Image (tube, rainbow, N blue to C red):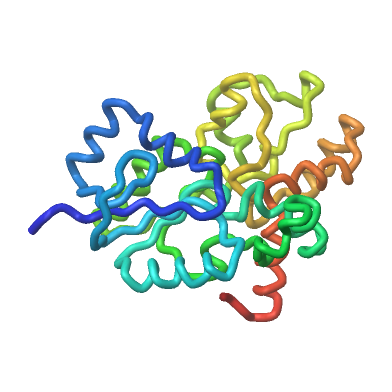
Length: 254
């Protein structure tokens, strides 16, 4: 029996997650020893049949919808990786505006040539088997999820706050430094990567399912941070979540 055939596809994104994989160094050699990569636009141009499809990018056109459905039909396993694919990501900010208006703003007189639809995460269009969050992805988590996919066991994204990992890493709380961080409401799994390197958490992994609202409110009141400011910051990556919640409330899933 041959190696599992893996194909990397990209939709609306910067392809930064593909670059993360390409830059894995020696770890990439170990991964390549276990799989047969048949498509990876940042590295190679070969095309062929595949068992596992790894998707980067959000769905932003009707052509994207058709294409991701075809990929899903062919793939035995589908993994969404990176914020754009898993939660809509930065592209979701488009959903703040009336589509024709934002299209004309971006493309000016050429707007009529560029069709667009509200940004959606991959799972809002087709079933997704594995999720790897982050912008860009955290390579140790990607490797862990890929191993799970290869042996056919589930990988569950941690659903507790980044603050848990931050405390385990003995980082000083950024709020005590006068900085506003979204770690208290953002899903863990990145080993508090950004905070470890003296940056704030931007919420790129998506919100935890049941955020500690009272605790978060206490933090905001303690440090005199206005809620609209935090909501605006969350909007950078999590705008598509609103659509997802509305679908669930009405008992509908794409």
